[in-house]
Image 1 (cartoon, each protein chain N blue to C red):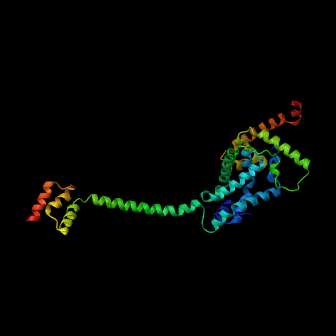
Image 2 (cartoon, chains in turn cyan, red):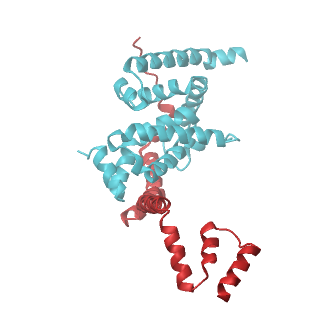
Image 3 (cartoon, rainbow over the protein chains, first blue to last red):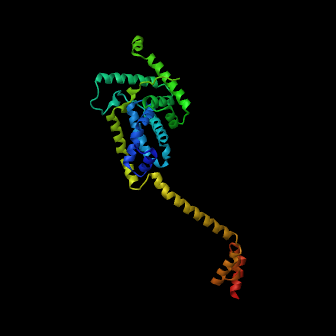
Length: 186
Length: 122
């Protein structure tokens, strides 16, 4: 069993690379979900995560160790918002997020997956940032309502309702944008 | 209000273990200079600033309090001025009228100079 965040934070403050690596591995996925909820591009979300973890390390002395998770996600969100503002020109390569991954499954499956990803991004884009964040933390990362509430400073009931609204909106937009309807409209 | 989760795996680039490892390794590499500085006892820039700023501020505050107390004590003891002036006048063997100029903190007038010359002539 791994040490709790409090212990790892204290060790990382003293320059313990293994402790910092353990924090990264524990919190990378939720950080990615929060970054993705803002920038909506997987490759950008990965870059935001790297930026945010380094910022967090530099500011580690100002962190309350028992609140590391929420503190980190705030940094991730702020870095993602800054990243989004700085990025004047949107990257033109839709396959960019798969960079560096060798081999992998059948290219046709990759294409289907990317096409679905693009549809999901389009369906999620109009949602308020907080709805996207809750949706990704719950449906992508598998966080419980209580955990999301603690990390984002929301009541559990509010988390449930926000999630409900987000799912309903995304489902409606996905139905509107099915390939059949797009073909029919063309 | 319960609904089934949406399948968002197509947005999850970190679901690929190789990708996850690559991102984690990238973060570890980028963090290594800061970790090395912390391991060497340097701490972060804020911690370093904090380490010297607080003692410096404390010393400056102490100096300010001592200075203020000294100024107040000097202002509250006007009797010391004539004694000091008299001491200077006596030490330099100056004429009595000179002490009056110094006490009144003014330039000597022509009449004062005449008085001094008369006193010297005696």
